[in-house]
Image 1 (tube, helix red, strand yellow):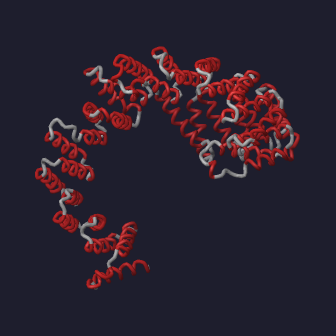
Image 2: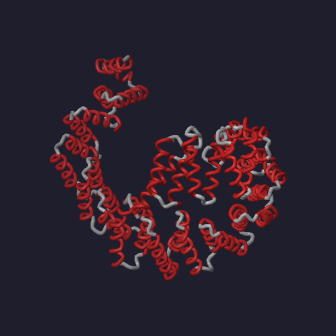
Image 3: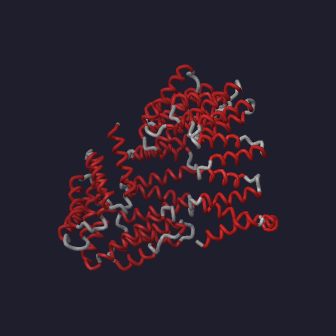
Length: 615
C-alpha cells in the first residue's frame, strides 16, 4: 500500500509542478519511473502504469519503450482511440513505417478489420517500390494472426520485384506455420534453386515441419514429384534422404544415399565435401540411431567404393562398433584389428586395442586374452589416459580370475598415481570397497565407501562420476542395514563375487538357497533383487518374473520395488513379446513410484512400445 501511495504522489508532483520538471528530471529518475511502471504492468495495474508511461513519454517523445508503454496499456484498457492518437503523434515525428502499421493493428484489436486492412493497403500503395514496407505490413498482419493475408502481401511483393529471390524464405515459413506442406516445400525448393547456401536452413525447416512420422509423407510426395522433373538435382535427393531417416524409413534412406554417393563420384570436383561423404555420414547416423544393420551395409558399401580414401580407419571403427552392439563380438574384434594392422601408430589403433581387450573381458570372458591386449596398451602408451584405463581393466582381469590381491594392487596404483583421472580413481576406490565386502571385511568396505560417498561435488555434476557415488551409497546402505545378519551378508557377498567372475550357475544356486534360508530377515529383499537380476541375465524370464513379484508382494516397503517393477515391464516386452502387460507394468511404476530414477525411462519405453504397435 505504501508503494502505491508513493507512486501516486510522484505522479502528482510532476503533474502540478511542471516548473520544476527540468530541474528534477534526470536519467536516474527516468530509470526509477520505468521500473515502477513495469512493476505495475506485471501486477495488472494498467491505469497506474499508463500514467507513469505518459509522464515518461511526455519528457522524451523519441523513446520507443515509453511510447510502447503508453500504447500497450491503452490497448489493455480498451482505449483504442487514444492509442491511435499516440501512434499518429509518432507518425508525425518519424519516418518509421512501423507506426502506420501500429495504427492498423490497433484498428484490428478494436474489431475493425476493414479499417485495419485499409491502412495496410494504403501503406503498400504509397510505398510500392520500397521492399521494406512489404515486410513491415506482413509482420504486422502476422502479429494479428492474419497468416493468409500476410502471404498475399509477400506474393504482391514477388510480383512487383520480378526475377528476385525476395520474400521466398518468409513465404515458405508462413506456409509452414499454416501446415501447407505442399506450398511450403515448393517454396523452399524455389529458394534453394536460387540460393544454394540455404540448404542447411531448408533441411532444418522441412524436418521441423512434421511432428509425426505420417506428417512427412506429403513433403516426401512433393519432393518425389519434383525429382521426377529434375532427376539430377542433388539437393532434392539429400532432402529426401534426411526425411526418410526422420520418418524411420532406413531402407529408402540407404538407397537414396547410395545414389548420392554414385552421383558424387561421377561429378568429382564439383561436389562439396559433405555430399561426397553423405554415405559415410549416413552410416554414422544409423549407428548412433541403433540401426546397426543399415550402418554395417552403408559402411561396407562405402568401403567397397572408396577403399583408397584416407577415412578407411574411420570406417573400420564404425563397423567394429556396429558389430559389437549387435553382439557379433568376433567380427567386432576382426574390424578393430584391421585398424591396428592398417596403422599401429594411428591414435585410433590404441583405442581399438583397448576395445578388443574389453570385448574379451566383458563379453567373451577370456581373461587371458583380455590381459594381453591391456598389456599392449600399458607398454605402448605409458602414463597416458589409455594407459590408466588399461591398468584399471588389468585389475579387473585379476579379480575375474580370483587373484584378489593382485587386482587390489592395480587399483591402489591408480589411486596413488598423479596422472589418472578423478573418475578412474573413484572407480578404483569402489572396486577396493567391493573387494573388502567380498572378503568379509565389512568395516573396511564401509570406510572406503564413506570416503567415496561424501557427496557429489560441483565438479561431478553432469559427468559419469556421480554414478559411482550413487553405487557407493547403495552398497553402503546394503552393508549398514544387514550387519546384524553377518553370516547372510557374507554369503550374499560370495554370490556377488561369483556373478562378477561370471560364474553364474554357482551364484544362482547360492542365491536361491539364501532366499529360502533368510526369507524372514532384512537382507531378503537384497537377495531377491540380486536373484531376479541374475535370472534375467541368464534369460530365465519366467523365474525372474516370479522372483520380482515375490519381492513386490512380500516386501512392499523395500527400496527395490521400483527396480523390480521396471524389470517386470522389461521382461514382458521385448522378451515375452507381451506389449500390453509391459505398458501396464510401466504405468504401475509411474503411479506407485513417481520419484523413481526409472520414471523417465519408463515413459520413453511406453512411447516406444506404442509406436511399435502402430507399425
